Image (cartoon, rainbow, N blue to C red; front, top):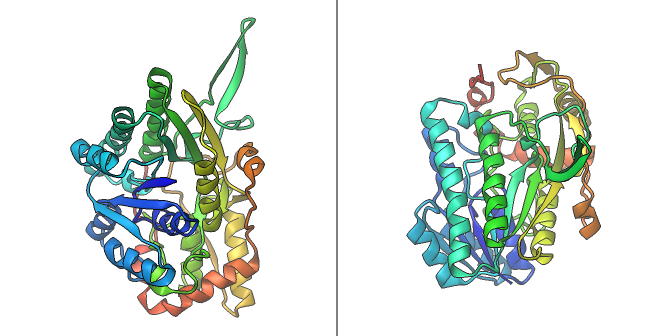
Length: 382
């Protein structure tokens, strides 16, 4: 297929570009370096030096012999985005191109506005670019399990059937976001679902849990192909943060009681899920939702697993409970359904001590680049 990847410079976007290129698809990547710019403005460097997107595709071609086309630009600029669609004529568009951080969206009014404008305008433009160039294009959007919140019932896969006063209907599962970022992801879903109904678009919405890990098959130990690896409180996912804290000798920052429970997945499984969604497009006028995770853990369980991995490496790891800067339930029911991707063939890479040790050993190679001052939480929801 011809696959257009929006936001292909990010933690998940770049590995997706290499993976789909390696599978034989013709890939074009679009990015405007928004995440890099925000991290730079906040003085939050990644653990590894990250080449420019143009240099990355050069390193990929040297390693694989395969070419990825690059366009640097903002998908909120509609003439630019529509021009990319007209030039490349994709079969599938994978939409990562959003401000990806819940803490960033809670920093202040300016950051909240940037999150809202970027995320919703970008998604709106994607819908229009598809409608106006080729309504048959399959949109694969990266959503988040955080859209659902923590309801006191089982979380169905996207939709729920309701019986009320003797009548039945099917609705999107009720969602209760935990940040402004997550609220924009809910609105993404609503926008696309409206255009699915109005214009007959084809959309797969991947409700993804927090992703951990570093290594993918395409990287093959080549540092120049590594993805950006954030460990700070704003852009680093919780398990990646814990891994870096353990190596740096910083007590693991368990927010509140640590009972916050979510569905997690290895970065390798993100690539599997996106490829499976792309290879199995939905019909016209259909919104398909997959809950994209493989295992469920509490924050405290993750911290304990990192402690055990550190012990296996001879590293003493301390856990420390901090006042929770977020507004969230610290003890709750959590039982989400996730059948769809497994039925398509997902083969999970599960979290083990060996997996954690492998990542920690790589992080230790760059231990001198770890800045302890950017780890502890400073952003508060209250």
